[in-house]
Length: 250
Image (cartoon, rainbow, N blue to C red; front, side, top):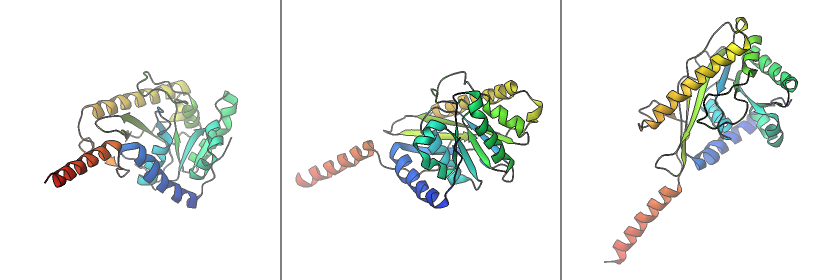
């Protein structure tokens, strides 16, 4: 496996690039609601649905904006080999080809949690369509929790949508923390509990978004400043054209 190798100097540069170029260029709105650090002194495993290539960059923006904890993100090994600079931001790999090849990454995850770190996992394993139901979860998170039973789990859902704007909206939501005697529960039961929790939260998340209410009314906090769009540029161009016609038509 490929371990994380954090670099504070690279992190400062990439954070600005991620927010000011990548996310502002491609999203009309990026928001979050919920509590990311309910227990600042405890290790936390964040489990999130996985439906887009953007998920990891949104997660990074989220914890760099709203958390003081030391966060790490599990990432597919082939992807991390291709984008090795993500190691400097806290990404580490998992080789999903066989159950045996995943063991080093799951042990590494356990060590991070034992040291009081914050770890993000996408228990679906691969990217699946946002509307796929039921969610299909692997048992990697359950394996880790049984080894680190004092870990708090926070379910996080991400939902992407398009409205009247050229760019998409991305909203993230943290659910209530889950604290159980994980070592007293079988892996299948843990996985099923996580699946049911994530699926229920994602459905509620979706229902809120499609209600048509404004994001601030729904309780979301914007974590990326808005950027321009083609539609906004067209509107501005139309206004200039109207002004020019008014001026030269005199």
